[in-house]
Image (cartoon, rainbow, N blue to C red; front, side, top):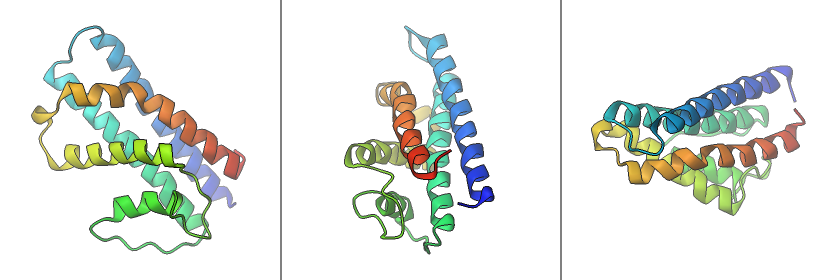
Length: 150
């Protein structure tokens, strides 16, 4: 693995970890109540950033393993598939079935957040995602580190 690739992964992991720290801090501020609109928008942005970071890591793997990837209307779904059960033969299988289901939910949320309005967000749907993001990331990070030894 090239030093540039390793550095890209380290930087992205650091950014994801900082994002998760912000989510955790907001959850502590909110608990046990309900967030206001601004807090919901902030958590929505952080959840979107979290998922974007995962995608950036996956795209770094595509470049490092020299796997071409064309973006089309479903590229976000196809990107996950390349590292899951339909993984490309030159790529490591980073994502198992359980992780795929969970990451796909964050992908779907990202789509809603980017293409919708923050005042339409629903806390009953966001709260579990916010509470579980760190756990999901720990499993993903462990898998990445096993593959590239960082």
